[in-house]
Length: 371
Length: 124
Image (cartoon, rainbow over all chains, first blue to last red; front, side, top):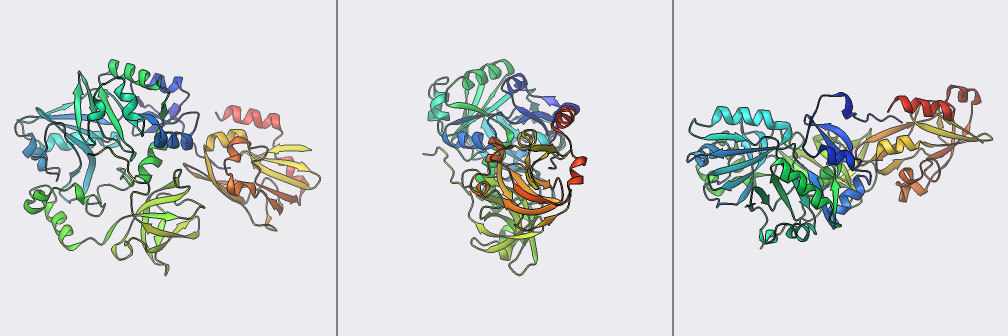
């Protein structure tokens, strides 16, 4: 058997404030975006995945970046970079968006929270340095950029998450999906990246570590590693930077044009607007789709997608086994003409062309808490 | 009955001229949750070291190589519905396939259990 298991021990890696907890829980640690992160705990990825869908899973996401943008000109400055309608956001509201390049392609995807004095941006671990350089070079002098130093960021996800968190933060369950608020010096938002109802909690180190311990002591809560985080987000049809999104992909091709505000589509005035507005009007030559296969070998990232006639029409950007559905699922980019829901395609897996079908995403319905 | 091991973490249990093949506890643990196996077809003749099967875990696919040459005489049909047998009982119910061994001399190239234990001790 050949197995190239990554070993986290011999690379110089950053550690999150929850590192001791991971080790105590018997996590298997791997390098991820320059950090030593838990890929799974002893129960394994499948059990962790199911636990999150059925109860409450706790994820360490402290490797991600938290950046505050402060100042009267923050909205205008950020709207130049992010095509969301930031001006219409009310305090505590959260939007999903992207940082755009001149090319109209994506530097990173992020969550943007409107706060009293500006915005809180949560950015990908793997893009932190690129994002901060980009912000420094694009923001005017009167807009302040403040990077939070090593906070604890955890996500509590799943149908029991609200019940559990309510024990520590009364009234937290009245938050709606994609809103957040301060509970003393802890910031809690009803958001996440699993497709489940849940919360993301951002706290200074000491409070964050103690909150993590308290949550893990609750019977409904189990720690969940990056392995299940990936299978959960894949089932939820959510993009992962470096896989579905990169510096050669536009938000229109990636199927996240819904994040571009109505006013922004009419007026433009953001980086790469010419290309993006043209794509919105004229369509794109290839776009992101979801593909499902019958049980069997699993298409992985990079696998070629073929038409029924055998022509190469695209590639897989993420693929895996869906623990919830019990068969392989994948996301990928295919030619627009083959991208309609219900189209039969083939995916090359180890020299065999496996039958697959373009299906609607999410693969597993979202369970967000909305009014 | 004799057990031998490869440096690719396969085991072979030899009974008469039949060899039963699977992967070790160590390998199963490294792989994580197994979700699918691709087994060879009956009658397939394989050479020592050639690709014999594929095991897919949640995270990755791994090839299984034939510990010795031979012809496939049985496959473990139970793995189709319960691929997780490889995680729960890798050296028992989680076996992959059986071969009729064609060259016993090849067994000399494989490790005894004590040598294999020492081998994984150094690859931790």
